[in-house]
Length: 359
Image 1 (cartoon, rainbow, N blue to C red):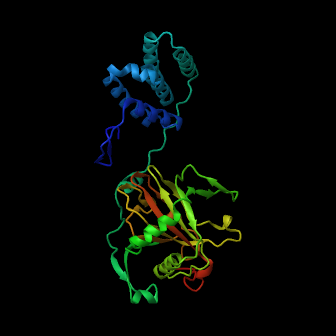
Image 2 (cartoon, rainbow, N blue to C red):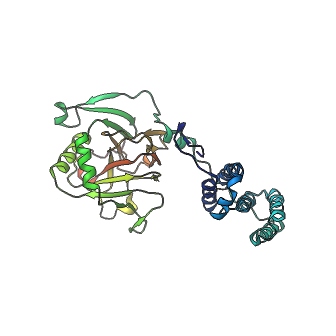
Image 3 (cartoon, helix red, strand yellow):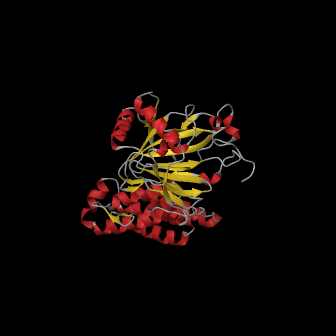
């Protein structure tokens, strides 16, 4: 990454030593000491290669002694305290006037004497998440593509191209369902109204979530475009949608993501609300790199493709929430990820999808 290589794609950019140590400090703040050490060592190599501009680094508040201090803090938290001690003593010999080094030495001696436990290593991200965010994952090769002509009467005249992704839970991807013209209109309606997206907390309040870095807005208009999109959603899903939430347009900029979450509310949070039987996600842009919708428990992911729409059921045949539908929006690495979501409520589907006690 420091050389500008992301997921085997080389970008015309790179990082310097100062940027690397800044990332290392951020990792330390988040208690991810293993990755912090990796970033620090990369930054140190770059710093040593730029000895001629060491003065500039110092003037910008990043002298070489800062690298040593951070290295000692990382090694201390990883439990490698005797190595940290030798490095710290070397730094003190080079910078005897640095008071912060003496304080670090005192802390380190105390930690060695009392045998303070090292920080617990952060659990490595599961391989499936890393793999399926980088490339499209399909858990089975037995599924297929077809022209859907049965979801509604209209589809007999104008069938939709549908890719079957999973039968249990039910999940399909519709191709070429939203035109470029409509996409431009949708995004124009949303621009100027985008605000930081919020989530519903356990106490029922809406709060900003650090695991959801995106902006969004609701399309509450009753324009011909919205009516047409609503009819399209009903034709695609064969669900009644007149009592559903409005469409929500979301924009994920560089680094924007949504942590793993569930769309259904569950009985504890329902109260007088109807649960979300299904979710439809319309992709309003291509994303050159990143931005996949991933279902880690299914080992399945979908890369954004402009004009397509992803549909899945959140509730099983008994009307209970299906935890396998836990999903995430992978970080956007390059480009901008535009999507439009539609949550479909359960209450109106009594005759469309009756609950079954067994399957």
